[in-house]
Length: 219
Ligand SMILES: *Cc1c(COP(=O)(O)O)cnc(C)c1O
Image 1 (tube, rainbow, N blue to C red):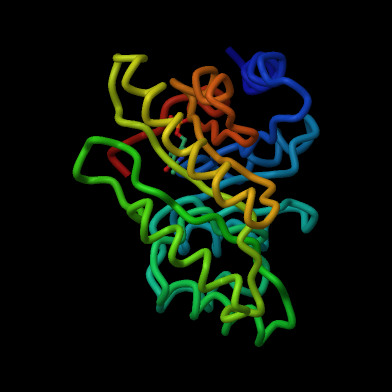
Image 2: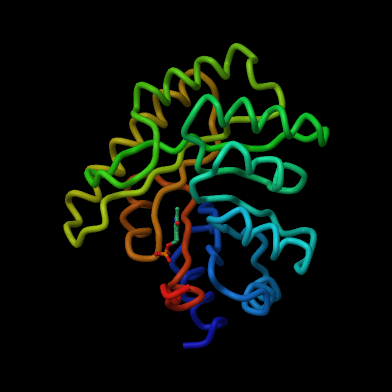
């Protein structure tokens, strides 16, 4: 299928209130431009260097989301333009993002990434850590960022019950924090599991391969 067909197929499966983050990692600028020309404005990349290379070559009204693990010393490279950092999993990172955003007179939106998968390899905060950081944020400790929600990744498995269980855990955390201070974004679901994520309460999904096609893992 063409990019256009893929894109419209995905869009047709998303209710209007669901934000689509088109995950363009490993895909060329021309493909991103093509999806942009179909109307998409929110794109996600998982590596700072790749994002920094692509950013100047694409329209300036794209809202870039960083969705991959971020090292503190790389925040400065994206702080001037990134819209949202979805993968924040430490106090150190919150501090650095706020500091660097301040230098640019900006407020960067941040999602706390919470570990919900059974798998060991996934990054993310424990639920108690996420709640603790949120409380710290509420004291005004990180003035140049706004925590707008949570992000999570389910275990990579065919077992839909397990995926559902993991997403539901994150929805519960979201509801808890949302009752303290209004949040906007619950980011869960990728190409293979976004329908389940939406059923479990996601309002933002990160879809890559279902739009852009398979990634070349040799790169
Ligand atoms: C790559 C990636 C996605 C998109 O994955 P697909 O299976 O290609 O849709 C979503 N979220 C994160 C954090 C990713 O790294």
